[in-house]
Amino acid sequence: MSEQKDKKIWKIRTVKNYPEAHNHLFIGQVLSVTQSYVRLDCRTYHFGKAISSIKDIRVGKKGVRILPWNRIEIINELASSFDYSKAEPASDKDGKITLSDGKIDCVLSSSYDNRY
Image (cartoon, rainbow, N blue to C red; front, side):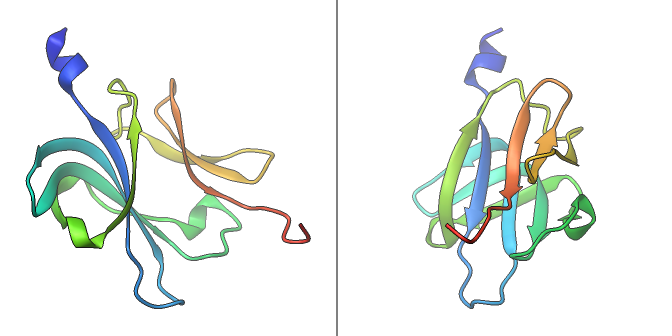
């Protein structure tokens, strides 16, 4: 029980250095954190600015990745019970693309009406 409580699942977005860069998300279990980097057992998600369907998202295989702090833009902590290894992208009627494990949804991308 305490292992599940101590487990951290993070969604990390990395820095993009140029305007046409894709969004890079890493979602998975934190294995270690140092002053220099975050080590994750995760899957990767890559997509551009305009997403019309889940086919526009490239999903990487599960693996261990090391992300230096200077490349990390934002971190969202997800529920420790979120099963990132089995979660699949899905879309809803509001234009959101989510990653769902059947119990918990994690938003990957949203489309907004740019008239506002």
